[in-house]
Length: 203
Image 1: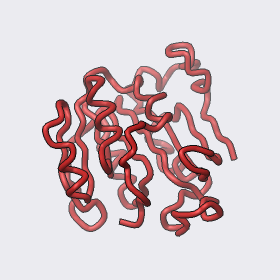
Image 2: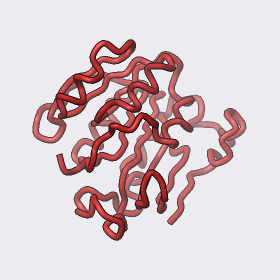
Image 3: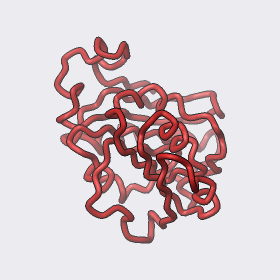
Image 4: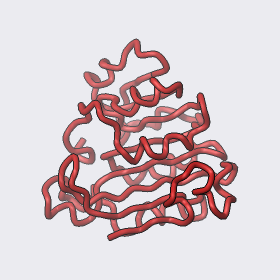
């Protein structure tokens, strides 16, 4: 699956996921899409969320067997049918993966108060290494365009990062209209996230 370079064997969750996970309803159900070896599934399940983890890699999925609060399955997300027809989640998490045809499906899979946390490589990453194929690199503002009219944007970044390796990254935190933060003029006051007052964009 070339749209997710490398593997997800790292035990360390993304700082973006750690930062915004508190927005997910306590004890809610989270879809960890293209979960790899389950670093985020493990992180969230340990903290009381119920995680549905899916990936094409059978070996990686087998490593999640028996973990409390984790239900993992193998699925071909690009050529096969959607593995969760009719299901709705309190959050959808995607990192280091891009398959554009799935974006509308992910939004449809969220409850009205659901949280989307998406972080992957962006245009310009070809200067640093793989992925370099533009099919697998988000274009400027692409995540903003994907959620426009569907979700309220809490935070957005499009920037160069140095860790875990130098890369161009685009990431978003967005919530459904029924989420308590969606209608707040100054949501940063609620959880102390200073960036939440309006979408952040860096380049």
